[in-house]
Amino acid sequence: MNIYVLLKQTFDTEEKIVLKDGRVSEDGVKFVINPYDEYAVEEALLLKESLGGTVTVVSVGPPRAAEALRTALAMGADEAVLVDGESREYDEAAVARLLEAYLRQQAYDIVLAGNFSTDTGGGQVALRLAERLGIPHVSSIINLEVNGSQATAVRDAEGDAETLEVALPALFTAQQGLNEPRYPSLPGIMKAKKKPLRQLEAADLGFGEGQLASLSVRGKLALPAVRQAGRRLAGSPAEQASALAQLLHSEAKVL
Image (cartoon, rainbow, N blue to C red; front, side, top):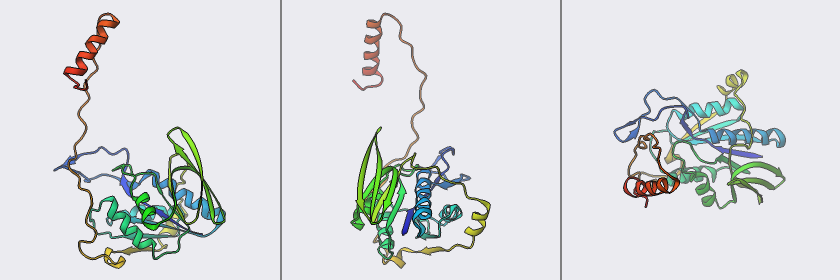
């Protein structure tokens, strides 16, 4: 079984976000595998252990993303691919096109990805990719079972659960609770240094200059407003309700 995992390198979730000239500053910050992608890597490894096959992790990103790919290799992935590591900025549509071009050259049975990335929270790339490849997809899965050419997935449906059966090849995005990602072992880290990490540029996938123009543009980026201290309303319940309505109208401007 050929399993591919889409992987993104993101800020450590404990890092403080600092804006500089309208952009998120990367000075001195720690980068890690996107937490939801870790569930995808772990699920791929569990499938490999039970069914056999190979696990390939793929990332579209700058050169530093190789660190995340090496971590996935140390966890147990067999191969890694870094696409277009020239620090270019692509929107989700362009990233999906790059991944599509790569995967169309491969024989794949299952594609796994995180439910969304913790930096942008868009959750678009994997679903765009499935649509472009013309394969079924199930998002936010919390359980996955594969039987021959069929897969049964249980997905989180906002507090409920849905069970779906799809034919392979198919794409799945991992939700928290799917599994417990393993830590890279020391032998795994040593083996990862010898595992192949292939680098491809957009031109290698058939894209010329200007063919990956973004379809969306970030209009503005700002930190949320500082939260003010709460206010205690005095008086009877009726007086409090009246004062609250007045504040919602005059200050919050939601009425």
